Image: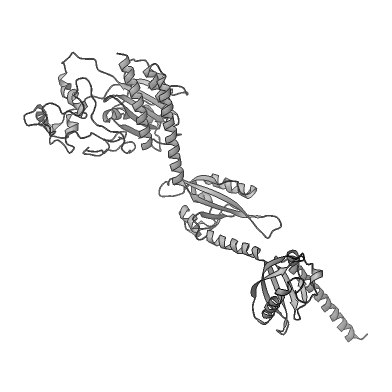
Length: 574
């Protein structure tokens, strides 16, 4: 054998080996495809048939390769002409041709597939054949729906959608979630959740870690969170959240890509549900207290029962202080200093000057309410109907509750609503009446009476839980300092709320003669039969929130029942 022939033989062997390697590589690539693939030579002979085509149609590679066309075995004869024409068009046209055909499985069933056909060109640009990749239509539709759903969720969804990666950092955020978090969509990406949430971040991260490890929870979760803000503390929000673990569809074993967190703000709904539940509970407590108090032979014991039932879920401590009744005077004998106040003051306000203001009768006019409103700890009377002024500053500003209708009728007072003698029906004093002479006094003001003497009558145990106890009638007043919320409630005949504030200064409760640990107080006047009997005080520790307007309404209802029982106890002791 010559050298040239040996070299030619060696080159042919290498080419044969390369073709064998290329053929094996091509077969491996075709078998690894997710789509079914069949290739045809220029004369229509099947040259390639991969595993996915075998799975869909049931024909093996050995059975398919070498056949001419698909008619009679993979396609019904009635559909063969249409498919042959489509393949011929794909061979002549540039690019891909997408169509849908009905193919035939080995067991005789028809399968609707979506095909992508394209010409295969040889070294000179000559058409060497055509390949046809296809998949079942419902599989393709599922994929397209998934893509469309993903795009819609991240664009137009009314739920917040956040894609969290395996490091618990936002990777994709839709517009709704960005608005809920108060940050731009791009500004959220890659930031730790702790930089976005001031409260509730531990619960969110715990839920995300659970989903990554165990999968999606069986039900939605309601998470209370507070957004982080450097300007002011934002209110808590309730997000009804669902979690879905994301895994790669290309891996043999599911590899977590992250978690899809879907949430919706249901704060208003949850608060409404909580308010309704609280109202039902309190109404039930009032009903139970009324039933239990009806079986108490002693009215004072019934008042203690009302106090005990009111404390459940409402306050940590309860106190009841009664105003001491002055010793009876002989019939017709009235102290000169108290003549005007006792006769007219309690019935028409706290004194004549409270009703009429300054010498020019004030802005309220006759019969105006002193302060139809709930007061604060150290401020003025809350603005009310006909009051002429607004409330002053206090430990904590409050809104209105309760009324001051000027209907306290004590011994020697006139019926509620009747003008004192010397007053014309119009409500203004006549020129020659004694009341008119009072208005001519310098500055038109008379000094108020001293603060009432409040004596402790009922108290809940401060150290350990237990029923409220009736204290012995020692007659010793409770050492309240001037301006105490109890005095304010008694004077205004309304509700007074007070709070130590976020700082909770040391000695705040001791200065008010309340149990240690108290940071929130609510004082409510006790009224029965047009008379002021005393003050009921409800106290809360730091574990509870401050009293609000709804709490004041409930406390006033409880105070009315306690006052009725104590009034009955006083009448029974006569």
